[in-house]
Length: 242
Length: 138
Image (cartoon, rainbow over all chains, first blue to last red; front, side):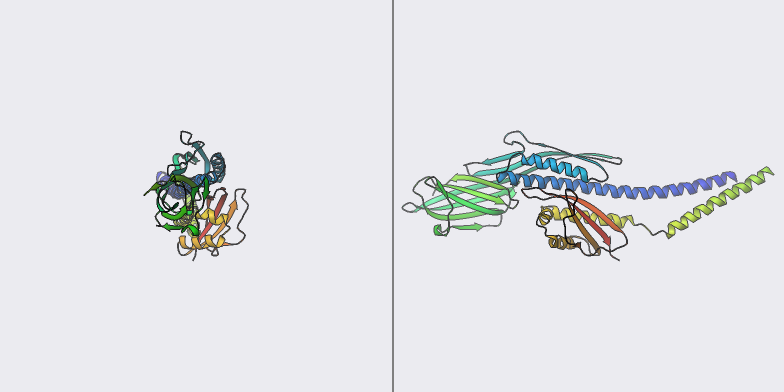
C-alpha cells in the first residue's frame, strides 16, 4: 500500500516536471530564433556600414572612416543584444592594393574601381550557446569605359563612349554620370551645343556621344559615376580613332 | 494495529497530495493559455519584415529622411494580414526620434516586441534601434 502510494505521488511529480520541461523547451526555441535573427541583422548592418563608409571615402572622406564607423557599429551592436553578450570584431584588409580596407584605383586605362574589404568575427555568448561566426564583406563598384572617335570636319570629332558599371561584379545602375573631354589641358563637360546624348540600356550599360572641336589627335575622356549606393568611381581613357 | 494506523496516514497523505495536484491542474486549466507558437510566428514575421525592408538599406534611408509614412506603408505590405503593429525608433542614445505614430493601432491580447539594430547606408552612418510591437487581431 505504502509502495503504491509513493509510486503514484512520484508519477504525479514526474508528469508535472515533464510539463514544465516542455514549456522550457518552447521558450528556448523562441530564444534561438531571436538569436538567428540578430545574427542576420548584424551581418546586414555590417554590410551597410561598409557601403556607407566606402561612399564617404570615395567622395573625398578619409580612409580611416571605414575603421571608425565599424568600431562604432561594433560598440552599438554589443549594447543591443539582450540575451547574453555579443562581441563583433573586424579586421580591414591591408594587403595591396588595399589600405585600411579601402581600394581606390581610378586609372587612365578605362577601368576604375572603388572597393572596401573587411573580415568580421561575431561572437555570441548566450545561455548555453557559444557561437563564433566569421564572414567577409567585400564591396566594389567597377567602371569599365571604352571610347572611339571619328573625324567629322576639320578639328571636329564625334566621340562615342560606352561604359559598364558593376557592383560586386554584377551589372548595376548609376545614380548620376558626368562625362568630360580634354581640350587643350582643360576638362570640359559636353552640352547640348555638342549634340550630347546619353542612352541608358537599363543593364548597367550606358552609351554617350558628342561632337566637339578638339585640335589634338589624342582625344581623352573622363567618366565620373556615382552608383545607386552613392559610391563614386571614375576613370580616364584615350579614344581610339575609327 | 500499527500497520493499519500507518496505512490510514498514508491514505491521508495521498489524498492531501491529490487535492493539491487537482487544485493545481484546475488552476492551470483556468489560466489563459499562452500560445508560444503564435508568439514565435509574430516575432519571426516582425523580424523578417524588418530584415526585408533593410536588405538594400531602405529602412535606414527612410529613418534618415524621417519618412514615417513610408515605413508604415512598407510594413503594412510586409506583415501578414491580421497583425496589428506599432513601431518606435530610437537613436543610438536611445532617444525616441519618431514624432508621429508608425503603425495601424496596436490591439490584441498578447503583444510581442522585437528590436532591430539598424544602420543607414549613407556616407554618414547613423545607428538606430527599431522596436516593433506586434499583436494578433481578434
